[in-house]
Image (cartoon, rainbow, N blue to C red; front, side, top):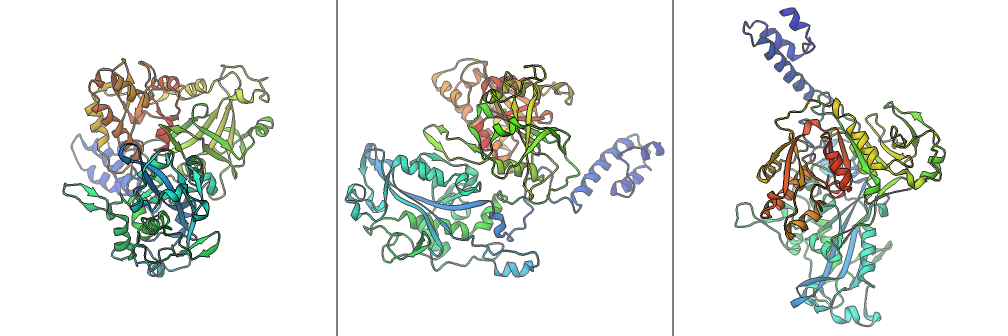
Length: 635
């Protein structure tokens, strides 16, 4: 019996598990053997998380390894921080509808963080840093507009009829918008021009692929007036940042504070005053004019408010980013995780049914000169440079709002490189239909529908992000093979090879109350839920139901599906909101069904807006299907 235990693969000499095994060998109980297996597994995991190679506290935690209070400017290498504020006038009945009348965007000419060098003493860096952490109190500013750069500041002709100019707050009068141009101190544009220009500034392509962080006060009002959208993960709102808010009468109620009160208390500067001039930098020149104030000396200045919000962020940026778990952390060396509960997933993007497009490469030239070579992962593909490659979200109108364009390629590279992020991905593939290239595709060695071969192009990672864990690839199908057929064949071929299902749980129909309860337990960690939900529509429903179904792409019964998942904490929160919205609709449970499925059986993640492909993949049981909206809110 002793020899059989020692020969067991879970028994290893030299670790803490061997000590427990030796103790348990003396037990005469029949439970000795299973107890040995359990304890050796636990202790091996304990050894792993305490080793020098393991840098995160728990496997299923997305906590950052950056020490609090030691942020350097390297953290912002791949991002741009902008401050924005808008002034509105009143329209509609009673002048209660806010119409855009002025928009201002500012930034700083440098990142106000001390650079930490490798040979520098961390303690000395901490002493000279302007960070706010632990018991230190940030120093208050004596000049709001030092090193301020005004990127955009224009009056806007409102798109509706003006009922109230709100001059006491906006500082805008009739002469400001419709008077003589010689009396106007800043240019004026139409609403459409302003919307296009601001969307371009907030686009990552405008800043060389960098992530654009927008800072402001009550930004939801500004984005609604502009009628544009920006990813929630790239917004820093001083009105909803908890340390800047007041406790209300309710148990957990938090109330926003005025921007002027925050600037006075946190920065020691009075804003929204008309008693003194301000200076700023524009086009590299110092300007001592009155631009930060309105020419009428009445109301607020959007440039000044944007500058105040931006300064508030930089005043508390370390605590702010720490509360968000440092989402902008630069890519570091890969982390070796010896213990992994779940295998990595493969992600596929249906390029034909998503508002995305490729920029920076000439695919036709690479297709003509296609030459396969074996990569490090054993797959045959052609390597192409990625220095100028961009995967851009196309202009997409969603409920009357224009979305700012996003470059997804740096985001996907970081998913493959930072292995401490949960969940982990082995490969990310963007698949396109070969019918667009039928004039140059070589069809001599391919029979449509035979084995669904594709031409594979691997994007070469930059020198700072090279990794053997996976790659971002582009696949072009042959003419005659649809992308949805190839994706279904790719994701459904291994169904028989997956782990056996638990029939008592997989496929079980649950109530919406159970669904809401499943996703309500959100502690900020990712991929901790053991199940996910597939919602299908099985009947017609009322007009109210149909409006909600249109939003969820369930436009017809027995067509399409909605996947609710806790793959990331953001997706879990979004799934909880969808479940709550469905639960509020009376009688909706009669026309839908919620199927409970096991997370451990997932092998693939497919992003598509094709309802027919979604329905086909929902039957496989090993594929999680996300919409483009869910992709935007994934992290």
